[in-house]
Every structure is written in structure tokens, then in C-alpha cells.
Length: 312
Ligand SMILES: NC(=O)c1ccc[n+]([C@@H]2O[C@H](COP(=O)([O-])OP(=O)(O)OC[C@H]3O[C@@H](n4cnc5c(N)ncnc54)[C@H](OP(=O)(O)O)[C@@H]3O)[C@@H](O)[C@H]2O)c1
Image (cartoon, rainbow, N blue to C red):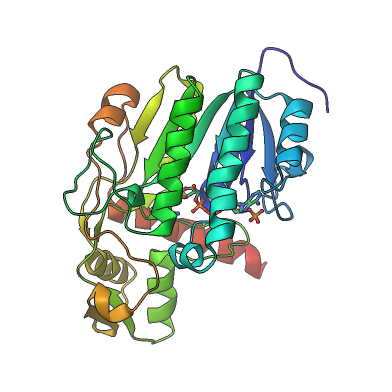
């Protein structure tokens, strides 16, 4: 591939994931950025085939060889083991990808003077005293949260030119999705006439994937460093999120049954109430997230467009 001098060269690791795909899509339309997309499985983005490379970050040698070969100016790391219960079930694999791999990425970022932008989570907090500012004390209640916090600690100790972007309950659609998210699960279940149990004692600020992708790329291209909170700005119970989603799509809200976290018996504990204070992102990036209904409108338009293409 011809290297275009003068362009910012961004490597997106985990380019197949929900956030990774949207970040890549934003990069592709920006003529001043050269994209290198990398992920463990076959490319899911139809647009970026020539830019796509296989990369398994569980292998330190692979990470080193890849970064040395491409020498990006910025790495955006969207790869992770993201399912809370999977992390409890297979702690070794969670640690390997969410912590050890980040440590290896840091080693090479330092060696080649590369800016690192890394995605993290509201699950680094215990959920007792949200809304959280960036400096608030962390105290994860799950192994997933612990792994995300450990990666944050490594990055901030090893690097100067870095941004840690924490986000919350991201929703949206992407190509060839391997995992659902709350809004799609609610929509699909109610459309199929199924009842669903939804917790009414956990509170979140749902985040449209387009908003977190835009904030992440802006941070990547900025000179800011440190931790940033990027999420939606409406705090509500997960039960309310499900109800507002059902109402938006004109579905039967009586199929949504309120339940407590304890009665779900999930392996991984979830923090009760997270939510972010977004003042830093608003001040530095003029960050302004969409409301839940604005996000759902975009989502429904994307689903309609997908269905129209699919039926052709
Ligand atoms: N989604 C949320 O609600 C949410 C909330 C808070 C924080 N976050 C954080 O945001 C980041 C992105 O989340 P997401 O929802 O976009 O995740 P996702 O859809 O689950 O995607 C994660 C990606 O990581 C890649 N990956 C896993 N193991 C890998 C390996 N060994 N080598 C290379 N790539 C590997 C996978 O690639 P393949 O598909 O190619 O196998 C997958 O596409 C994560 O750090 C997550 O902790 C997400």
C-alpha cells in the first residue's frame, strides 16, 4: 500500500467491534487520515478491505511485529473481552486481552512514539456514588471492571501521550454483529412477543455508538491527554431505557417485567448506579451527545436502510 506522507496514520485495533467499526467509518471519510484496521476475525467492514489486517493481540510477538511494520502515529484500541460474565468465567482470557495485551501495546507505543487512545468503562466504579468525574475513586465490583482498571493503570504509568476514554452502555448497529445490545435485544424480543426481565435497580447513561466514536476520534486527533468520560447525558434505570425503547418502536411495554439485579443471578456483579459528569468533554471537545430518542431515531433509520438493502 502506498504510504501517503503528511497524513495522520491511525491503527484501529478491534476494528470489527461495535465501536471499532464506527471509528473506522469516521476515519474513512476523512481524507487527512490513513486507516489501518486490525482485528482478530475476518473483516466485517465492507468498505475497508484493502486497509484490513488480521491481528491477534493475545500474542506479544504479533503486536510488536505489526506495530513495527506499520508504524502508526496513533493507535485506537477498541479490542477487549467485553462481556462481564465471560470475564468471570474465563479470567485468564479476560486478563490476557484486557490487561496483558494492553501492556504489550504500551511497550511498542513507547518505543515508536505512538499516541495511544484506549477504550475503558464505567465498570471501573462501584456504582455507589455516581455521577462520576474522571478523578473519582475507582473500585470495580467485577473481574471485567478490574481488568479495565488495571489496563488504565498500566497506560497512565507507562505513557505520556495517551487518552483513556471511558464510556457507558453503548447501543447501535454494526455489520455482522456477533453480540446484541440492550436496545436491539428489547426491540427483537418484544417484536417476537417475548416477555423480558429487565433490572430496575441499575442506572446508566446509554451512549449512542456514533457519539462515542466521534468523541474518541476527536480525542485521538487532539493534543489532550488523560482520562475522558464520554457517554449519553441522561441517567435512567435500565428498566426505563427498555420502556422508552419499546415506546419509541411502538411495542408492547407490558412485556417488560421489572426485576432486581439479585434475582437475575448473573455471575458478574454490575455497579448499581454509574453515569458520568461530562463537563471535561463538553469543555475540551464541545461534546454534545444525542438524547435517547434522537439516538433511537438514527438507529431505526439504519435498521430500515439495512432491511431495504437486504431485501433487494
Ligand atoms: N459496548 C459497551 O457497552 C461498552 C461500554 C463501556 C466500555 N466499552 C469498551 O469499549 C471497547 C469496545 O467495546 P465494543 O462494544 O465495541 O466491543 P465488541 O463489539 O465486543 O468488540 C470487541 C472487539 O475486540 C476484538 N478482539 C477480541 N479479542 C481480540 C484479540 N485477541 N485480538 C484482536 N482483537 C480482539 C474482537 O474482534 P473480532 O470481532 O475480530 O474477533 C471484537 O470485534 C472495549 O474496550 C469495551 O470495554 C464498551
